[in-house]
Amino acid sequence: MARVVAGVAVPGEVLLVLCLAAGVRPPGWVTGGVEGLVLGVLLLEGWVLGSLRRRTGSWREAVRAVVPERVRRLLLHELRACASLGRWVARRPHGVRPGDLAAAYTGPQTAMMYGLLFVSVIETVGLALLIPWPAVHRVVLVLDVYGVLLVLALHAACVTRPHVVRPDGTLRIRYGALFDLTVPPDAVASARVDRRYPEGRLVTLTEDGVLDLIVGSQTTVTLELNRPLEFRRPLGARARARTVRFHADDPRALVTALRQPAAGGPV
Image (cartoon, rainbow, N blue to C red; front, top):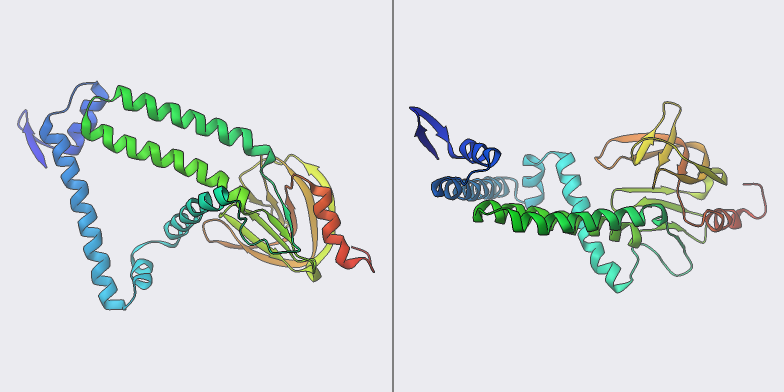
């Protein structure tokens, strides 16, 4: 929706941004127009997906045709993280069977996550009290509440998806719903406790094939492989690693569990 201002047609969305920047109350037709635009976009997206579903025969293929893979993976990560909230409350870890060793890795980041959660809650309350415009207030409130939920869900996913060592020596290295790498026992050349403080993002791969899965700016276990293993980055890109360095709160217990199946030979 647009209106003529000083002889110039100004879209409602632009006028809303200008009003917010100037700290003045936008006209009622602006906020109402923006809400109508959002509703119209959602209806249009639903119609497009419905048309593609009829053509392809399945919702999955329709979503694949419209939504890029990176966006799909991010949405899937968020859905899995939100589902982890229920597992966290019920104390039901994901992918841990009887006889497995579950190795937690959230120690270095727990205080930071709760601090971020506290700041997000304060921001939500503060903006709810400061924003006077109902339409803007509703949009910001939804975004802030979703942000608080997402921070809590990310931590819940890390708690309920620990590293896992199977009785046969298979190792599953994870970080919440974002990263999951299974290392078969015959691929492990050596495992040792090795505390490091690397720099970089959560998943960092060097040119010589060293993969760092960094939690709280540190790793505590180094896994040397006798052959390259393929893994997927959080957004779907594939890569190979010959050495994996990751964090475990109790690295000695994890390394000991990895060595037990190979008691008859060196690891």
